[in-house]
Length: 86
Length: 156
Image (cartoon, rainbow over all chains, first blue to last red; front, side):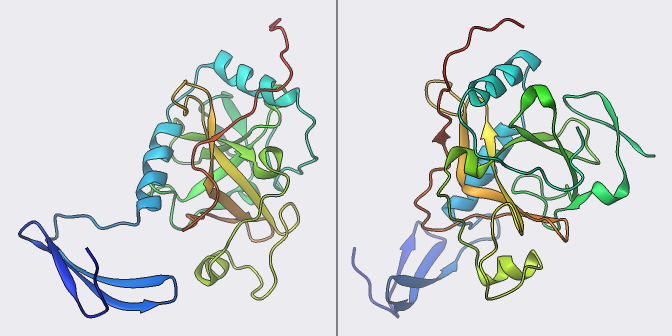
């Protein structure tokens, strides 16, 4: 499908997407969809999902193993944030 | 001195001056606004982003330069404002800002740990304000493999 600015298309019965503006490599879209349809940038959705998985607790030995595999590398110095509690 | 129960390190003392504010929380955890950074000698160079209000919530982070010494974060003007950084001057990692990747311990298809370089946690070190920066069109992966260091026999 090819669309120009001002043209639109639909997805299913309830969703309409219009190309509002094309400027260089950026495209501005207008989306009409029911309230129940969440519209987020893909990278935001991916980040949310990755965060939720990353926040799952890790077993202490897995934590130590993770640190150990990094510790053996030559690491550039990296100051901790002020007030980091150790 | 207030105490906090942490996800990994038991009870710790902290002072109010060491609390970092995340006004937007983090994606998936929008209600969590206050965090502490924790570090432990035996888990260096990992950093831990511990929620102040939810003791079970603790993200494992890696300073991003550990993974990629040439890493460059792309901040939008809105990000610079939200972080209260000086406009017009790119912030220096390690001086103005902390830039760290959230680690997913078993993130890869093979169960190997990965780090989200596409959306780093960026903190204004002076103002103690943090934000997770979701970069669009980023060349960096959200599942960057964490390289295996020299194999060391486990003796713990």
